[in-house]
Image 1 (cartoon, rainbow, N blue to C red):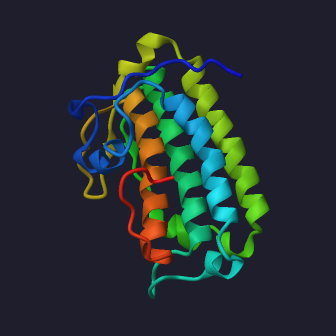
Image 2 (cartoon, helix red, strand yellow):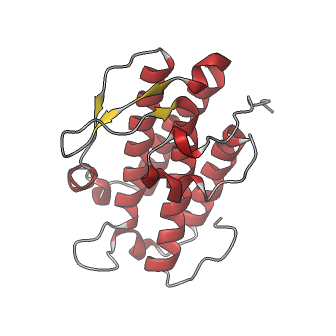
Length: 191
């Protein structure tokens, strides 16, 4: 078993306020890479336990399907890992945001098999973990910014905040799936 690098949880001045809802879902310890590794398998087991017909259905008009949510998680993880790489390498060029609704709309997620989605998800997750595992320690406090939808430069984020954003964003969507698609309120542990 791999002994993962320990990465302390970021402080509130290391990420924009909207990321707080994701980061607060994570334990106050430094085992984020262990979490990313373990949670992938928990998520996969959870999704495979659902009835197949629910994966391509919407809980309301205009909302994403579970398959679209899964591909959104992959897209978001890729984008935030790329941002983390740029910031870790001390590239301070502001990066543009992305239109998550267009990404979902054009993802083709509902035409894909669950197996192909999880094959891609696993490859992205392994890449994400290796990126953070192999960064030098001093890289985790480097910062960068994105250009917001309104054209303004957003709040700085640290590299370590990106790792926690990825993990918390995934938990938030799992919680959302349970509450909206399965009508199961989530208290405490999400998965």
